[in-house]
Structures are given as structure tokens and as C-alpha cells.
Length: 254
Image 1 (tube, rainbow, N blue to C red):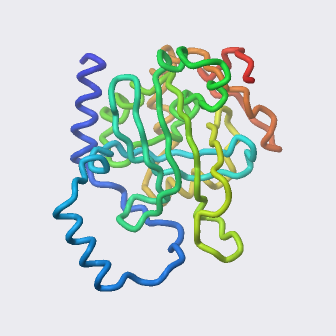
Image 2 (image 1 turned 90 degrees about the horizontal axis):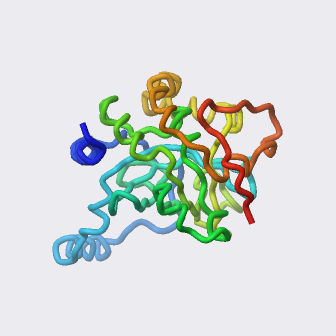
Image 3 (image 1 turned 180 degrees about the horizontal axis):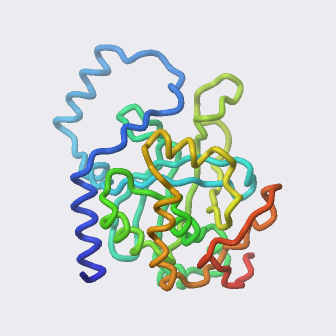
């Protein structure tokens, strides 16, 4: 099966599979909707286009530490559109149900496009091999072969992620997206992710991260050294270990 055919199969299966039903972690501040607002929504749903959000048909769940605050870590539900073979764009939520809160955005580029970026721009883009080979990045609902084919297309890719709202944190008692957006990064060593974070996700969604990690070992020969793997090395305050196949390219970040 060619890479292009495998990608197409993944997209078809992803569109057909239902989400995991993971609910939001908080209820936003604000008054209940009035009848008038509900009527306006109903009219808009009939009369206005919705092609852009409906194209977000790839569902992924992973974890992000903030680059400037590695101890600040978020579970991110990605709803993505594969624009072409080299670019995907994702809206991030705190769950997969209709009531989930929008928490950020992520752009995903291939290694080929990343290499075309100016050196100063590359500091915003985190590597993905650690997320994939550790088993942390998952596509809930997909059969194992389809998920593996999807992950194969993302090996050696990079993401530029901005989180605008950590709904798990209640700042000043207001359930609102307060403060500046934060640049997110990736976990590139075992032990970097906060203990219990992955396990809680796995219990909630019925996922076995260790089994996924084991099943992805055949992707190791595809993994090349990536920029940014060492960007947060030593900043988590606990012992960490290299993930086989996840290697820093040695490129200094500005």
C-alpha cells in the first residue's frame, strides 16, 4: 500500500469513526442561552456555510508542555484538516463532545516544509517523533492498522502550537481564557510528562499507551534526528531517559 493510499484510507476511516466522548474539563463563565440566541443558532446552521469546521475530520489526542513553563502540561484534543501532503491545521479542545472548549491551535508541517523555514522561525516548531514513538499521540476510534498508517505519515513532522486556555486551571475563580497565549512543546524523553497524566487519559478513553508504543517500533527506522528534541532537556526536575529513535539533530535554536 502506498503512503498516499494509506493516508486516504486513514481519512476515510477517521471520518467514519465516532469520537471518544471525552467531555470538557470546565464549564465556561456566562449566562445560559436565551430562546432568541438558540433560534439565531438554528437559523445560522441552515443558512450559513460550515464547510471549514466540517473539514476537521482527523481526531488526535496528545499532551503538550509549555515551552517556557515545562511543568505546565495540557491534554490536547486535536481536530485537524489535512490541507495537503505537507500541511495540516488543527483546532485544539479540552474534549471531544459538543460542549468541549476551544483551547488553542496547531499547525503541522512535514520535514520538507520545516527545512524551508528561516532559522529564527524554527524555534516555534516542536518535533513529533517523541510523541509518536512513545505511544502518547493517539487517534481514538481508529483500528490499529489505520492508526499506524496515520502515524507513519507524521514521522519526522513538526508542530507549531499555541494554547490560549488551560481549562484545568481556575485563575481567580473565572472559567475564562485569561492571560497571554503560550507556545507549547513536545515530550521528547521518558519521564518528562507529569506522572499520572497519560494514565488518566488512558483510563478515560480506554487506551493502552504501552501497547501502542510497542506496536510502533517498526517505525523506528523511519525516524531521523529532529531539531528541538533537546530544547527542554533537564527542565522537568526529575530523571528522564531517551526514547529510542528520538534524537536531536544538533541544530542550535535562536
